[in-house]
Every structure is written in structure tokens, then in C-alpha cells.
Length: 329
Image (cartoon, rainbow, N blue to C red; front, side, top):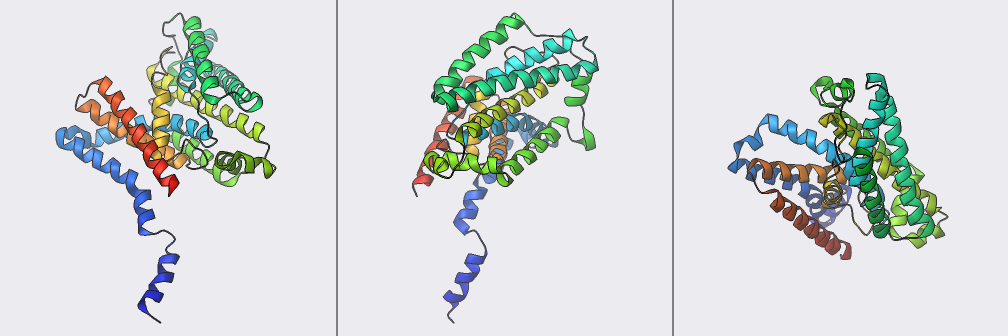
């Protein structure tokens, strides 16, 4: 038997070729490279305290990136995500204040968040999947309505007087010296990972995104699946909104800010394709970490905020080009 014949089965048994391994590792490598480059300019970037801060910041963005991933897998997206965060923050805060502002009122805030986000996600899903309106048009229109509602009920001002336990437990709490938002993001990741990999609903998302006609031919009820995807996206946005509200200590009508763009950027950079059917929550988390490291580094070296947005836009475009080229191979 020749040496070539011997090495061929070994290469097949390894599961992944060297090219595939490098492709899978390119984002972690990019994260390390970005950290080193910024660290050469500003040594604080490589401090343990900053690493902890990066992990904390990435945990928030990871939740929103995973939310977008649920609909990106189906060839959709949710442009109302950021404003849903703002409305949930304001409405949940008002509910807690109305119920006395004690720690027991946190449950009322959570209930308000679930109801409002669920309604927004349901409306998006029904309009997109049930009626057939384009996701861009639907979620953009929803974004405008949600923003107007958030500004109206708050009067444009923060809602204060929230329970002290909200911040103490969900922003400052650190079980096993790990900040609570990281624990919550990790739990959300685990549940979503299992959902995508081990449930019929998760497999249906991939099939619908890869080939909607094949999904129908396979007997998948696409409308309920798509509606549930948008509801989950909104509920994850509500989860992130509650965590951000706990961190700020008030309900902020402008809390969503650029979260929609950042969440899509994180998911796309991680490898979730806008054409649907490929990616996952692991990719979204890695993308969120990369975007956070980049943003953190630019902040520490004092790069202008507008330039940071330009950089984020460039990264999205480059990622789309790379994903398109890989899809054609």
C-alpha cells in the first residue's frame, strides 16, 4: 500500500480539512489579532480588568445577536429590535414603579416585558409569514411605531424609582465571581443551541432558510415556525432590555440606540448568512465578542464615535462579500 493511500483515510477520519479548520478559527484569530494591535497602542486593552469588561459587554450584545439569528436563519431580520428594547425598558420600568417599586414589583416588570415583546414579535410574524409582507417593510414600520410609543408613554424622559434589587441582582450580582449578565447570556445560548440542534422547530428554521419550497414539500408548516421565530427574537430582545435597564437603573426611551445594527453586524460577522439556512447561536456569540473587542479597543484609543460606526458598516459589507463568495464555491 502506498504512502498516499495510507494518508487519505487518515485525512478523512480527521473530519475537517486544514482549510476548514482555518476557516472555523479565523474569527477567534481575528479577535486575538485585534486585541494585540490595540494593546500595542493602549496597554490597558490587555489588562485583566478590561478582559472582564469585554466579556460583560459582549454578553449583552450576544443576546441581541442571538435574537437576530433566529430570524436571519429564515432569510428575515428584525429592524425593530432596538426600539423594542427601548419600549420594553420604559414599559417594564413604569410597571415596576406603578406597583410600588419594591423588589416584588420586579415580577410585574418582567410580565410587562414578556407581554409587550411577545405582541411585537407576534405582529411581525403574522404580517411577514401570514400575510406575506416583506420583512424589511414590516419591521421598519414596526420600528417607527414602537419608537413613537416608547417616546409618548415616557414623555421622552427616563423612568426612575426602580427596585434596588433589580440592579443589585441582575447588574451587580456576581455568582462565583462571574457577572450575572454573563450567566444569563450563557443560559440563553445553551437553550437556543439545544433548540436549533435537537428540536424539529430548530431544524425547520434551517430548512426554511435554505429552501422555502423544499420546506413546504417536506410538510413543514412554515407560517407557525416563522411566527414563533419572530416571537423568540422579540422575547430575547426583552431579556436584553431588562438586563440593560438593571445596569442603567432606569427605564430609558433611547436605550435601543444602535443595537439593531450592532446585533445584525455581530451575527453576520460570526457567519450567519442573510440568505438564510446557515449559521447558529455559536456564530452569533463569536461575532458579538469580535464587535465588542473592536468597539472596546476603539473607545480606549479614543477613536471618534462616528468613525466607529463607519468601521462597523465596513465590517458588515466585507462580511457579506466573504459569505457570498463562500456560498458560490
